[in-house]
Amino acid sequence: MNTSAKLELNDKTYSLPIVVGSEGERAVDVSGLRAETGHITLDDGYGNTGSCLSKITFIDGEKGILRYRGIAIEELAEHSTFIETAYLLIYGHLPNREELGRFSDLLTASQNLHEDMKYHFEGFPSSSHPMAILSAMINAASCFYPEVMNGANASDFALNAARLISQVRTIAAFSYRKSEGRPIIYPKNAYKYTANFLHMLFSDPYDDYVIKPEVVRALDLIFLLHADHEQNCSTATVRMVASSQANMYASCASGVCALWGPLHGGANQAVVEMLMAIHKSGDDGSKFITAAKDKTSGKKLMGFGHRVYKNYDPRAKIIKKACDEVLKTLHISDPLLDIAIKLEAAALKDSYFVERKLYPNVDFYSGIIMRAIGIPVEMFTVMFAIGRMPGWIANYKEILEDNKARIYRPRQIYVGPTLNAYIPLANRK
Ligand code: ACO
View 1 (cartoon, rainbow, N blue to C red):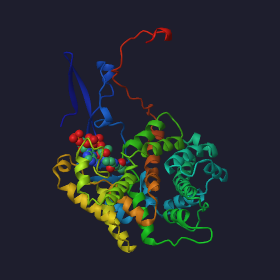
View 2 (cartoon, protein in one colour):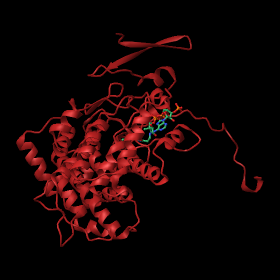
View 3 (tube, rainbow, N blue to C red):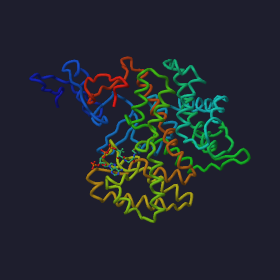
View 4 (cartoon, rainbow, N blue to C red):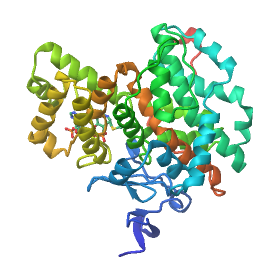
């Protein structure tokens, strides 16, 4: 295999080094291109651009492989928990018993919001989208914990990270309670991470929510499967903001904003809304499939397709199985699941989807599980954000610890007007 690529430009030949990743991925290193040739690369939407070297997550989209720190997602889904996986992503190895205990204790000790943060919730209209509240409150956390601004120190980092992982769940639960006009429920030390979240969402001051282990496991699995996914839109945003040396909370709040859109984390909400609309219209899904193939319809089969996976998203397989199990355990029969199964089967044999390699992604079935648990649709993307937090923090840490890190600053090819004279207001038509 070549160790460099040759570029011929204006009668000159340039040699560009080839960088090889630990899984054999190959990239042409163009970091010296502009200085040497006066040219830049143009890659609209970054589909061919490696923006960094990273040791966190490996994806092979053609083969449908996803690994966190080298461990297959299927193994983690079967044997690990969200919190253990969060440690793995952030600190680079599976924790031993003592490390896991310390991490878990730190999360519990950090779970209560600063009491004054509670007043912020009162300022939001009750109709606020919880993603807006989440990003605002994560950013506001740097006012209450100003030590986050000198995050390079290892013990400060550990505390800042634990606060963020723990409190994102508390903020999410408080924003839900606020939207329902119901009193805020404080976390309980006795509960583990995901059970505590369900308690804060669904308990009442006079009546504790009955925590079912199957429900805890299903939600924990959703968090785990979302915990990282290399340089997606929100993670790349976190790294972009972190590269300016903005603090961890500011960087991760920007990730929440990027995640919100329906083409990214908002897809889980969009999937269930699509399934509800199909159900309401009496369609069995076939009319919708026809519309999704028609570019003028403005419709897409939400939960299908992925920039990187050109095969079944491995997370979708795991979630589909979990979805069947949860619905069975809770004795729920959801017509939306039947529609989803029909849509999937129809799309997987339709030449439009086959030729474009469009398969179900992680969002296709996760919404059905969350619906079964009783989580409202507007909260779905918030669930994704809670899950993705360890991945964002791990990526933030890579930037923090890279002493050669430079501010991220892409270039552009300008295609606007050339030099133009200023016309005084009185002379304009
Ligand atoms: N329904 C119908 N057609 C689709 C879909 C879809 N869900 N996804 C892609 N296509 C079509 C495109 O229109 C395009 O068609 P063309 O070649 O005739 O122009 C072709 O498939 C290739 O798609 P791209 O737009 O190049 O795919 P891209 O990589 O830019 O986008 C994305 C990926 C955003 C995920 C897209 O597939 C999509 O919008 N899917 C639905 C939303 C969704 O489920 N998002 C969740 C992503 S996973 C995540 O963030 C967790």
